[in-house]
Length: 520
Image (cartoon, rainbow, N blue to C red):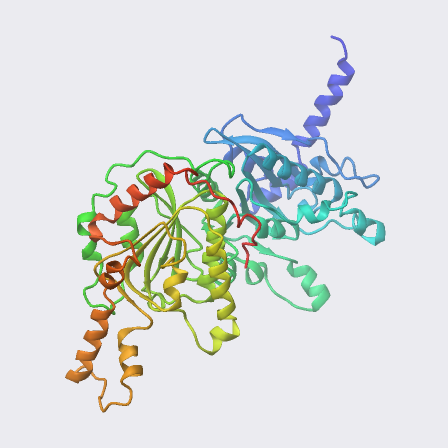
């Protein structure tokens, strides 16, 4: 056969690349209970759809060619549920997947080419930081930025053209952490960690002794920093979460999110929805139960559920159409939004505006969590940042006032004058500047009333304030669009979404938030 020598060399180079860091390194990865980069790609993508780019890459450092198959980063194109995606995976068996010039160039090119093609990007992270000695010294450091005028700046910035997913699947330091900060959706596997620098560097540089888990484990990022949107029990659960998230996303910003079949049982509980709302106006309840009643069966997909827990942000479907939900959660702090909740919602606005997802608000908010600690966290600035982000939203917006909505928080939840397409209330709603009981104490504070449950005059004043807060006052002068029967909420939202789909824009956003940072 002609060219046998050349073909044999090709086959040998392929074999070497597919072996990654070698049998011992692969075995060590498995001993840690983790898959290799190539195994992860195979498990996530549809079978036999992976097309690799850069298999024969290697380090540009002399003498390192054979030691760095694919230069520790594996990437290319494939399909998830029949839809094209670009995929990048850190190969921890090759120098702990540390970053180098060649690998960085490959990652950047695949990511940017995917956006030009209109494909989502999935990044499977497990890596150390920058590779040494590759980027040591003046030439090493400067060359890592590339030779183009703004190549490095482009690799560390992003305008949302196509969805980007990042999975923290092992210890992620350096480059995968930067990718998580750019991604729209981050899922972290329990037992994995993410930080700017690893414990070894911190001990050498700062004499700090800390474990990977303490530094950047899942509890740190799911509960404290808000850097991750979902937590996976293991790698298979991680792949399941990624697939589910992408099922809500368009492939790129110039198309609507994909519709889905309406599951059996959707909406069947609407007649009983008022059973979930306490008759006592100050009693807490779980807003998630109301949301599950309204949206399609099993479609509620919370984002950052353990961070800013007084605020719910979630993807869902109503009559098969994707929506983004922003709701107050009364079982946490009475639903008062804190600075974490404000940051979380801003991030969610960016996601929805970038990918044409209508936003539906559900009010039950007594205001913002204020006080000394809140002021030190710049609550006022967060409130106005939130309003600024909402003013740039150009996706359809629907706002439903379930119960209380007081003060500035009313507008932060899409109240009157905030560009909301459909603004309605349940008859259970209370709309006012502050809670009626606080209002009585402020307005009548000089009167000789004991403000207790047995003081008839006080209770009469509270009742009067509650009556004045009825939504019919605003509805009567067209400051809200309607007061609806709570049992009609699902049907109302579905009809509103249909009207927006038939509008001139079809619900496609102007993407004014596409470059807004999402990691606060």
